Amino acid sequence: MATISARYLGDLRMECVHNQSRAKIFTDAPSDNQGKGEAFSPTDLCATALGTCAMTIIGMYGKTHGVDVTGTEVEITKTMSADPRRIGKIEVVFKMPPRSYSAKEKTIMERCTASCPVHLTLHPDVEQVFTFIWQD
Image 1 (tube, one colour):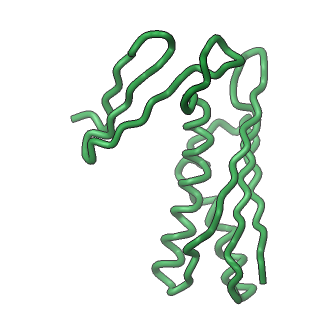
Image 2 (cartoon, rainbow, N blue to C red):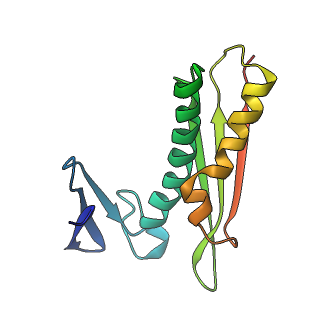
Image 3 (cartoon, one colour):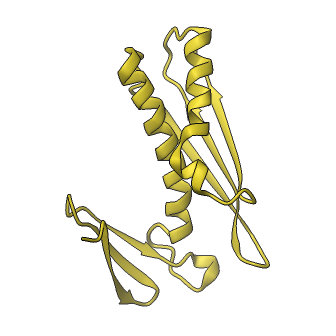
């Protein structure tokens, strides 16, 4: 069985259903590429996948080792390239909550981004920048 089912609604809009949970999301073409930009574009979802995947890996580390990362805020910036039109750069900024993380915990959390499956899946031409803001 498929993991996700999607249906084209016309006017460059898709309805996507996560088959296990039945959760729905919609995508639109971006306003700079013939769309309305009223929902995530497919490339927005790709960038979002990178940031949320990396944070999930950090969360798994925290859960396993008793390190609370609850409340971490993630900001994701996607930059498009032309010829061909593609994602050129994704910047992910982790604003860590004000906790007393040890130097070792910080290093491990920063290294978690390298084991993110989305990070490992994206083509090497897509520049990926991970930045951590520690609020000690």
